[in-house]
Length: 393
Image (cartoon, rainbow, N blue to C red; front, side, top):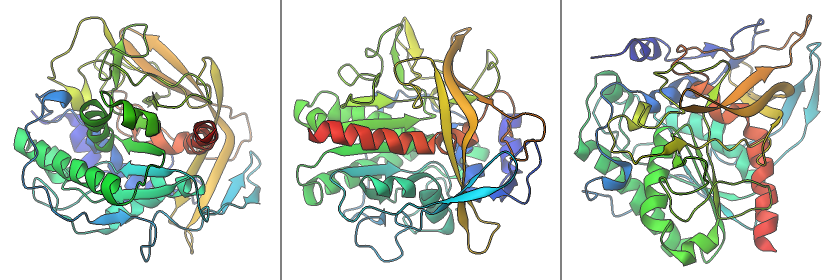
């Protein structure tokens, strides 16, 4: 049965306004609206992330969406941002890709393909380029960004509830093949960060579980894994014991070899939430262990409590397109209620604040899933910078 969330998302394809409070002409990229579908429960998977079929028909040569040295690399763009204040004024914040960063980032994008087949092909379409700019490019300040194309389950397949173990195996097979290519030909023993959202988070959860968690050498190279909007599990009250037995939750900024995971809401999620709950959303139907919970690690305050979120959106309504930052508009803290763990996002808006705010575009079950990455993008980049320094020491 097709859920109302799926229908709502299907009608949301295209550019969407930031939500409450007036937009002042600020729009976000279409990619931001597309990413939510990766976590849909529409025809959701019934197989365990750790029990997928063996990859089939994986390509022999990786098609790189982002890689150092590529022409027109969407992960190396102008990062200059306009920091917007409550009165509507702005200041310019300079930023640029690092010339020779000491670590790498391996990014797996969420569901964005508008192709009509169940699995996308490896053609780079505008949707992949856009989401790479929106979610991955700012990490170029601190790492060399590698992002493979993969034959992901498409938006069409999600909306029309087309799913099978083979479809998922093809997608993961491409990610695994690209990872092996990266390790064999580009890594050269460097530390690496994994970054993924929604379907990309699911791909990386399986990759860490199967390739890294039980491999001490690779765990030693893991700076961190940012697995966002993907319902990563841990043993209740613990930092390991769910999806991973050896890769723990990140609990301080100097910790390496750890995972940051969360899903954002601006109000208490319902009991049937797609995110923050074991066995929900993109992981519906998977076998679960007893005494499990979904991990929440707040990138604004890993040790606990709340903190300000550094929010960045890539605005495509302006010519040229540009980054807009809201550095004191939101706060985040991990909350738990009714078996759901989530990152609670609140605004600091007061009367007269002219900045736009995001809303639950797809309804309470989805929360702010559309904006998981961008709401805390500045925090995530800062965290990787600090973790890289700790790793190199």
